[in-house]
Image (cartoon, rainbow, N blue to C red):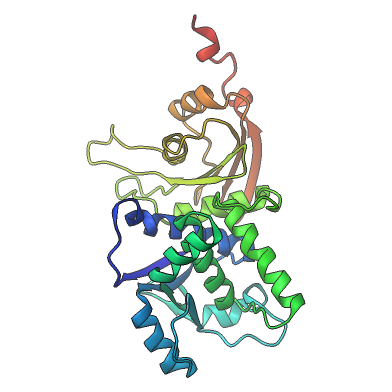
Length: 301
């Protein structure tokens, strides 16, 4: 999902990574809802004073709040975004490169105070508020206990995939969801020389996912494949145990190259490999099948 990100509140140190966190969470929300085509959302991070002004102007409530959402689509009663593809497609924004779901305003003052109040990280709180706002944009509400329970289940499913679970988190993502996340990662490919975009989604044993895309270079030899981009991101976050990698391309089966097979073998010699291309074709295999008689850490003294 494309984030039209506007930041009117200065962030400090680690908190400057907020844009990367939110991009992954937004993709996980879209996959959890099951929207197969590109979407976009406008997100603005602001202070309490600015969100109070917005709350007063649009809801006639003269107080600051944590998050406000303004959907582009008026969904029929009982329906959410997955049920209304034609309505979503009417919101296509060529500049954003996707169907515009709406606008989300988040108070950074509330992010920090609520993270301290609930005893979890600023990252978890910021991503939760984005998730909450996104599911509002996709037609979910919490006006009664049944709707509230459904919305919370969807929020936690997305946060689980993004690596921000609660203790009672839902099951890890399915193969179809991993493939969908790989397809979304493919949209961010930098491949001006080959015109062969590839996306990957790596599933860690703890349920977290890490996306990657191929990043080409004018020297050609310094190009990095999507599989290694995802793996290196995970390794840099301290993760070492992986179960599945999904890889997506447009017109041909994107089986990992020899270099990627060898690098995957370093950390996950038995990893499952899913590939998808074309109009949804999927094949499943494993690294031992792709790299028989492999050489790895076990072979060194």
